[in-house]
Amino acid sequence: MRFDPSTRAARDPAGMLDLLQRFPQMCEQAWALTPEPSLPATKPQAVVALGMGGSGIGGDLLRAVLFDETAPPIVSVKDYRAPGFAGPQTLVLACSYSGDTEETLNAYEDASTRGAACVAITSGGELLRRARQRRHPVVVVPKGLPPRAALPYLFLPMLAALSQTGAVRAFDAEVHDAMPVIRRVVDEQGPDRPDSPARRLAEQLVGRIPVIYSAVPFLEPAAERWKDQFNENAKQFAVWNTFPELNHNETVGWGLDPALARLLHVILLRDATEPDRLALRVAITRDLALSRAAGIDEVRAGGSGKLARLLSVILIGDFVSWYLALLRGVDPTPVAVIDELKRRLAKG
Ligand code: F6R
Image (spheres, rainbow, N blue to C red):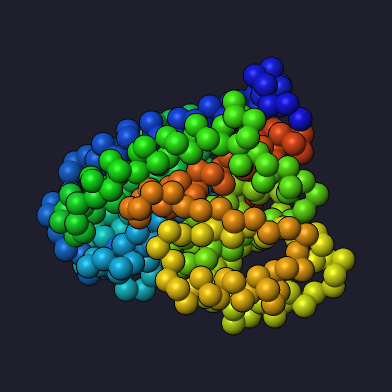
């Protein structure tokens, strides 16, 4: 298939490609967004990020980035409830792009009632209204995007806010270093490049179920995001898991019927700083189990900083899901099933 401008316009009428190409710009803008009013210097005992779907992945990324830092524990919550420990010593980051996601609103109520320090990250809706009424600091992000395409706005302001309070170290240098790496992803993976690796991978995936494995726990949210983007952009079922955990269960599941194994295409997300033991696990697992799949591809995170590695591998996946949508003949932007579900829930 040709991915020339007229095909893109016909098959991607709402311009998802344009949003993917603006990802680096969005990262720059997002890093400058701060809560209003600003947060006081604080050392919370824990940080809870509330959010669902495209607005939930930011909390997962925050946890991955801060896992090996001197930082308060980060808990990413996708639930109607705030965790039982949430109270006055907890900082709660309530993130909903629309501001109207019922799980997030409910968990925010829960946390707010228990006296947690709350910050809202949203483009509007009920969350903005309630946060303003309670004088909770708010990061207002630009409106009018599909939430999943607004990822930079739903993640980086959380990290920026934590840095500003002194709860975690400064990340300005890492954000700065990540920019050329993600700009390169846009150049190398976009449809003006006939040799785009994302395009070649998407072509392999037609008629197959993507199985995305992160080689290291650090890239776990990237594996989840790849799955989510296959689901929402390409309207395609996909699964994800992570090493080393999958070696203790899912590896055995590769004993499935050969006819089913032939439907699966494995995508291994590899990290530049993989410990030798994890690399060895991936090699042995390829040999023992994954070789039964219809195909195996490896995608490498770019750059050396944590943000460059995570964001680059995520953006490559976003492009793969976009190509797959066009190859499948589906419009990458609408998520009619989610909209209908929310409509029916609102009536119920
Ligand atoms: C749509 C998307 C969804 C939403 C989710 C929560 O692009 O990615 O996963 O993010 O339904 O809605 P918001 O983000 O408005 O809280």
